[in-house]
Image 1 (cartoon, rainbow, N blue to C red):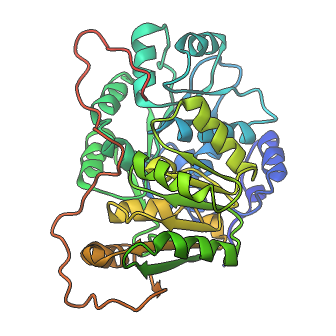
Image 2 (spheres, rainbow, N blue to C red):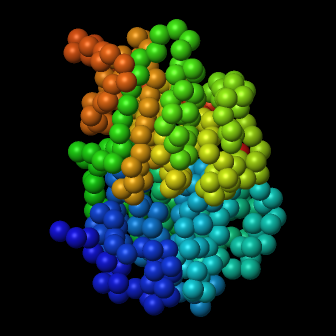
Image 3 (tube, rainbow, N blue to C red):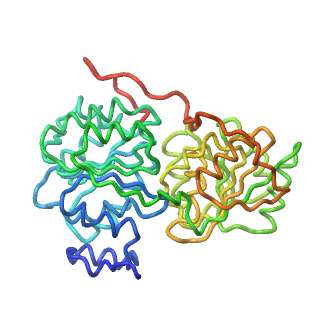
Length: 407
């Protein structure tokens, strides 16, 4: 059965004009399922595979609901990272291009006074990282009194990064009736507790219950012995000539070491990790999206939510920390039905976690080396939930708020 078309929805002409310009014709499955619930004001918990169209799934109906003549924040979108905030505001800006609606993103690493000035001038849809929004709540006259819809995007990652206290504080500032939309790739117990506490009779939509990774994604695995990994990878890339590639490492040090070696072998390569200045990170992401850079070496800062439509190859150079990390890394390719390949290097010590990844992500592996015997390998009782991001954010907000630029 063909997907519903955007022209079949009762959307404002300005929004339909923008969607036509973006070449959005048919709704993705998550857009089709969530749209009626969002437009009728229901709280929802939406679990979907990465790259399924989650941003526009809530972005389109939110833009539709905003009254541009009311110069107040009417929708609040919470995201875990600066990069996601920038991507989100870009997507919303595309949707409301022909309207008078003003979206804006606030995040750490950018002058707060500039953000205060913009908020005073008028913002209808605010996208924010938790830390910077709380700084603004404490240090500016920002008002959330007219927020009709709160969106928690990549909710599992926000909790994984230690933002639970911040999220609860922000929700406590919305003392009036409002709609809450919770988007997440996974459903750990912490998300269930958050939803039970703050959502009102939510509709739960599990579009990834039986399928975590996109069907158009080929999962390849290669066992590495000794120091042959780098040589094999450079020969593979020279032969296959991927359109764009992201190579994941588990630490900044590994990322820098890999970059030093790879820049001597291939052209158009750069690196990104959390220790870099925000301006450099943003510049690299923009150049990568414009295909001005073909290969980036990254820590897991590049693994969540970011939409790079031209990436055809993901390389897990360092074995992922968890099945969830594998899902989000590999999800940077094969987005929105496009084809892509994820290659994961593993050693004998990774067999237990490898078995868990294959089973937990419901994937069909393609072996680039001899297939290991995983039958008698015992899987770990508890999954690791760290993503190589450093210490988690902790602490409450009693008393004076400590300003931070790290969100």
